[in-house]
Image (cartoon, one colour):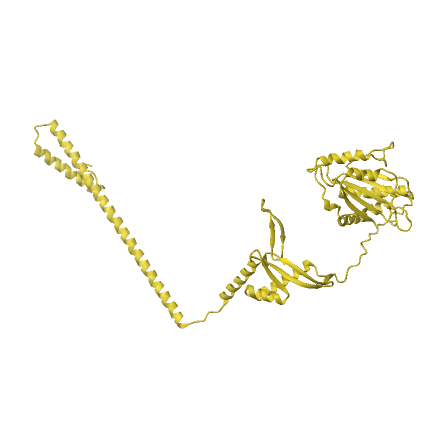
Length: 419
């Protein structure tokens, strides 16, 4: 079975020097420290045949690591690289052909690094100089994978990608697809034969308890109509409710039995952590909005309103007579209001008619006054032309002309004299 080891290193230079330089720790298999070397996103030294040399310069590789480190937001970071060791068992590589199997192991780990850490720089070195097993003392074939903690663009590689759980899962997936292609042998996943626990459904987990608690609350809230009865019924199920935020929120508690004894579980009704600057929701916890104190109180109030709406009303003769009297009184009031509205409109029309008549009379008087002034000016002009003329004749003539003008005014639609 492949054994994985992952650790964070303070100095990438010291780690690269440890892996590439120095003599072999165990000479039972080979006296070489590095059997095969490769890397990703790095410039490596080559031999005369154009192949990547097994002898590399640690300062040269460290300088390339350092160029990416200088682009980081914090160049003086505590951990500069991540070191992963993949150790193969004798069933996977028996080291009978050390040179060929070293190239196969290098190909596998190089492909794994390109697939899961292709955005970062890495150094890969195959070794077989370890202390080995407990019985024979022979070294096992293992591969060192050193990954720069800073990408080439200055961004940091997430540390959770180096957890043993994720590495084991990703490595098993990659080996199932590529081990047979590289070695010609079938990959046997040591974790594929794990037996499923028969009591897995009986195990009490926090999520299962939350689900069961929701079901209990949904059943109880429909049986009660207030907060006091709700808490009392939950108490019969072994569930207690405590208040927080000055009584505005609740927390549910229950003590359950496990194989190792009793266990106390608690969960909030609903809680959200809000970013004070942006107002965005950072995290949400609890059972849900429907299980808060305010939501349950609103539910009970609505149930009371629904029950009151569907409650049958008793028929009383006195109330019926009173209702009939109210209907008649309302109709009489409507008639009175209608008559008052009609009278108001009539008065308004009469007022408008009188106003129009007064305006017409005023226009007639103005017309007569204008005509008299016009006749007076004519008479004065005639006297100036013929001073010996009889003023009484002129006056009669002017009066006659005035009467004709009035007649013409009162007969606007008739023909003019002489037409």
